[in-house]
Each structure stands twice: as C-alpha cells, then as structure tokens.
Image 1 (tube, helix red, strand yellow):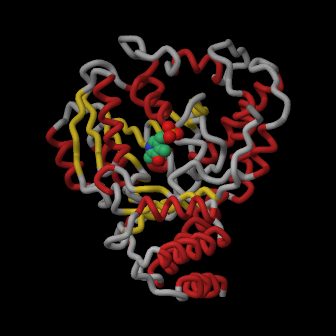
Image 2 (tube, helix red, strand yellow):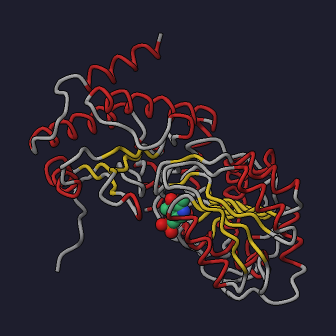
Length: 394
Ligand SMILES: *Cc1c(COP(=O)(O)O)cnc(C)c1O
C-alpha cells in the first residue's frame, strides 16, 4: 500500500463542498490536548463565531463532534421524551429522517406532507397545529437539499410560537448560504453541518439551543437516551464556566478547521455571503436555461446553494454524471427518492460558489450533453451567464 492521494475534484454536488485551502492548512497544525487552556480558548472563540453565524445569543451553541445527522439526532433526543407529539413537515428526504428520529425517541410524529420540489404549505401546518394542541414540537427542514427547496422558516417558527410549540430546524444546507436568524425567528433548536455552505471538512455539526430548550432539557423527567449526545453532560465540557470536565476527546484538528471556516465567513460577513450565493445561482440558472434546460423548483422558493435541474427526456442521467467526473473531475449530485433519475443537483456552496465554477460547470455540462446527443442549444450558455454577471456589476 501507498499513502492515499485523492484526485483533484471540483465538488458541485449536495456536499461536501470544496474546502478552502486556508481551512486545510489550519487543520494540519499540531494536535494539542482537549483540556489545554489554549484549546479551551479556541473553543470559546468557536462558540462566539457560531453565535454570529446563527445570529443568536444562545449560551448553548457548540459543534457536535459528528456530522449533520448527529446534530439532527442531538436535537430530537434532547428535546423529546417518550410519548411526546411532534409535528413533522416533510417535502423531501430529510423531513423523512426527522420522522425516524421522533419515532426512535418513542415520540409520536404527526406528518404534514408536501410534494418533493414544492415548499411546505403553511396552511396545512397551521391546521395540524390546531388539530394537535398537545404537540410539543414543530420540526422542519429549512433548506431541503434533496430537492433544492427553501422553506419559509420565519413563518413556520412564528406559527409554532403562536400555538405554544417549540421548534427544531434543520439548517445543514442553509447556514452560510441563505439567511438563518435563530433569535429573530425564535427557533428553539437549530443544527447544521460543517461541509456544506461553511466549506469546512465534514464531520462536525454546529447546534444551538434557546433558553427555553435548555430549560426543557434540564428539567426532563427521564434521562436522554443517548449518552454521547446528552447536552446535560456536554454542557460541562463546552459550558460557560471556566471549569471544564472531560466528556469525550474533541476532534481537535477538525475544530481548528471549523474555527478557520467561521472566521472566513465572518471576514466576508453573513450578508455578503448570502448575496454571493444569490448572484452565482442566478448566473448558473441563466446559463442552464440558455442551454435549453429547466429548473425543477419554482423561482420563489429556489435555494441558491442547491440547484435541481431537470434531466432532459431520454438522457442517461448517471452516464452524464460519470462523464463529468471522469473527463472534468467535476462532481454533481443525483436525484434522491421520488426525484431519482429525474434531476441533477448542482451545489454552489461556500468556497465553491464562484464565477469560475459556474462557467466551468456550464461548459462541462454542455459538452457532455452534446456528446450524448441531448437536445441542447449549443454556444449560448456561457455568454448568457457572462452577460448576467456584466449586467449585475453595473
Ligand atoms: C447533508 C444533510 C444532512 C446530513 O448531514 P451529514 O453531515 O451528511 O450527516 C441533514 N440534513 C440536510 C438538509 C442535509 O443537507
């Protein structure tokens, strides 16, 4: 065997996204102990940077030492006890995982279902809240990565508060790409992931709990079913007091990486990061449409960072992705669930959301579609996208 050297790729799928070299460099610095005072100082800075990213003053704001799925699990196991009723909105793959989590916690999931590719219907959610006045939590996905849909998080959180329900929000793909406003929207638990719009290495899940959620966790009548994810224990390691006690060995170097990723976000500012995602998304869509391709999701609730493109009739969608990877080193995503075989998912996340990637993706896709005889309009896409950029810079 020899050391592993990954091929050079451009990652424009649903995540992971391309990692900024500054972050990889930070990760390669020497490992120190997880109770070293210098490491504790780094943890405090990470908490502060995460509070900026989530737009919150929540004291319990930290990265879970595992990927986004563990953040999801941490939200449910800490907030729920057996028999609790949760209204779960599902309009894609990740809402389905929330249902799994509720049921595995011994809770009762009341499902509000919408089509894959449509947004969550607020009227249906309000009806479910009225019909289930005993529901404790409303759970929803902000950015549905499986379909490219943006759900109206502010309105959903407002509805939940009106009906005295707590909220759990999945912001794995939204954080850093579109607005997330934990305090302004009054969401109780929000979890995210390191490898999407934060462009950090995979394996960490930033999470934040409101004071109301913290109270609920402290006053549980039964223990959290997961020892590893029990926030009552994790608070003693990540907590505000100067005395920190060992819970598990933090992923030291991955946290160097997260610190750098969050610094990069703060240097740019949240607002400018959201604007950059919107700009390159619009340029990509302009180019794709000039090629004769169509978008799956209506413009009003498209995610800039995850673009679902309809696969033209008769085209082998997996074959196209394989060619993009082999010839161009370009990774884009396949459809999931009911959209399998029907869409490609093109990510414009964090560091990878730039003009070079937009133009590269358009040219690689046009060439590949042409080579398989797909009905595409040739030679229009790049100039259309460039035209969009020119128009925006005046
Ligand atoms: C990627 C993703 C997850 C899961 O994150 P992992 O880091 O893969 O565990 C959860 N929810 C959404 C919306 C995602 O896009």
